[in-house]
Length: 159
Image 1 (cartoon, rainbow, N blue to C red):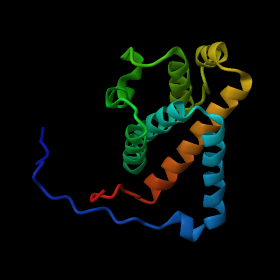
Image 2 (image 1 turned 90 degrees about the vertical axis):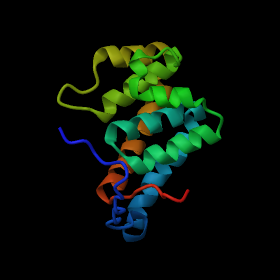
Image 3 (image 1 turned 60 degrees about the horizontal axis):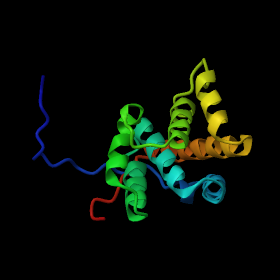
């Protein structure tokens, strides 16, 4: 097994294109979903959903952005670190756990769809409108993750 050399300088990836410049109308639609989510989902819950989806999708740009945003908003860094193992953590409320399970299921959606147990737990703690809003937030974040990953958008190293 080869171990990576942490002292080796890795050249920055070059962003392939700026979606907001090449397809501004389409990009604006995704931004509109974000505006909707910000107006309809609790801010703390929304940041957890954004960060969790970004972790699953391997989106370094969005993980950096949303962990920074959450920390700046006063979120406890321990909770942010624990998102990678949220099912084993006691840091999250029942509502947050339901939203995180929904985030995982929608982000990793496959042939079986969202499991009934995940949906039923969401229904136990959220109204139908709140579930719809969380699902839309997850969809929005997955769209942004796919834009950033496919175009190789990376976090600024000097931030």
